[in-house]
Image (cartoon, rainbow over all chains, first blue to last red; front, side, top):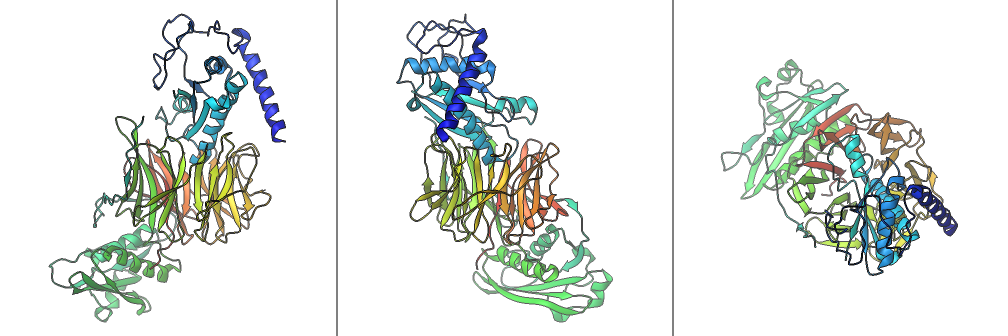
Length: 174
Length: 433
């Protein structure tokens, strides 16, 4: 029963990933020639990572700056089409090196009940986790944590702040 | 790594004994007639020139804060008796007082006092209650609240909650991030004591039925875990640190178990019951939706919880012994964080009311839902032990502040407790003397 549901979810995510990547090259695990949308800036992938903990890759990976923050729509834990290839690029990093570990930190906006928002943040982190695993990352590489609405990045009570706070932060932990 | 500054059992009284300068009581809605009462300054027999505490002031403030009484100002009192024998009832009917409180404090030893008070009905010219209570300097304030409880119950028929406490969480911005504090204060905001301070979030405090312990969630290990802390000693035990979410603790009526939310590695939050002595957990829900915010019914038979198995969050209940969950709330698209009144008759929740998150109270039997708050982002309702009043957090500019409201929605007021962003108030049970 649960397996069946997981399979359906998995299938949907695969389809979603497929749809969204029509305009960009298909991310293939292990394909180091895959170049993201923002090619050009020749910096190391984690150089500007404001969240720390990353390290430079030593291969010929020349993608543009890779964001570590995935934003979500209101009341949704679905990875938006504009972030599927960000997730794909992180999946590639994980698939290429089984020793890399990430921690997915899920967050919600401030509205509604706090513990329920912990659940929503976790659901977002899990949604990114499944997408990474479908694309070659292994379960052992990924930890999740939800901070709910407890660690906002934007402090206002307006649509713009809420949108910035509905997020998953991908943090490299080794 | 991240440094965790945890301060344990710090008896950091932010506000000292006489705290009225720091407490603002602001009545935001008063829907009932307020009975005029006179609380006459208490007489004093003892060595130092001053009484340790102005007991009459504490009692008058308690009665005023209930929203049901209008204390008469001292300058309008025609006489200031300290015993019933000195009362002239004509003087009190002239200033339209319906009830008069008189009393005395007698020093009986180095740090020993005897507080006596009497409550009189002005119209019937008779004593309604009279009591003498021993006190020390340290207990003087709680003795004043106990006197106010007895006076309040005699005049309204509702048990007073002036001698109870409220726990809450505060967050204050600093250079590096935020400082979170778990605070316990008297219900009037006095005697604030920080029982835990951390640079990582603290959430979801819950009282044990004997008021001696608090369960809460701490992210001090960079992930959630559930702790139980004894207030008197500051001793704390990590009772749940499983993979994934460890959240939303709430004590069983006998204090031996905690209902909590466990998410597991695959992140599916479900309701579990943890036996505090054996540390065994028992899973009560298995749905792949978010099931969280469990709370026991006062009779121990059910656990009410939030679930979004129908789409949006709604309140459900499941037999505490295990069984099939049944849906409890049907009005509106968002009902979360259920809390039952201690008499088991009402259910408070966060309810989405035309775009605003507000506190609603549902009559369990009739299922009638009443919105009792008026903010845009109200949360964390918690009943007082008399089931008559609730405390919750609302927004004032960017910060959370606490408000109380009667369960009928008629008397609502703001209580200025805590510094910074104040959230998640939980009202203690009745104290056990």
